[in-house]
Length: 90
Image 1 (tube, one colour):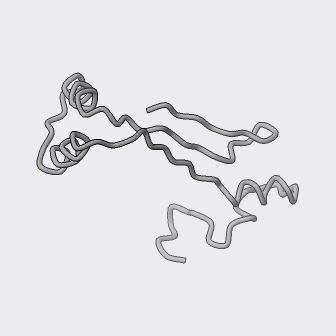
Image 2: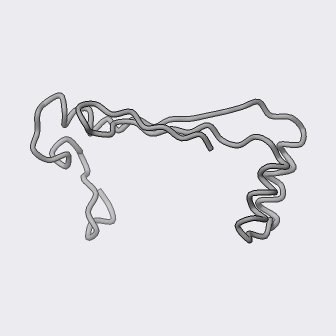
């Protein structure tokens, strides 16, 4: 994939990528990595053979934007439900 990150003042606020849409290239990459294309991957690859346009996506980290905008000292203060190894539910 062609990946990218967007930074504001040295902080990553967004990540995204353009996915590979060429079925032959996907199979070649899987072969190079020693990954067997089981039922799930095979149907994914087959769907590309019917034609798919280049596609991409991105995800913005809203908590990071709020953290920067408010000048907070910790990104966890900008999150309603901060992630924690001991926290499984909100």
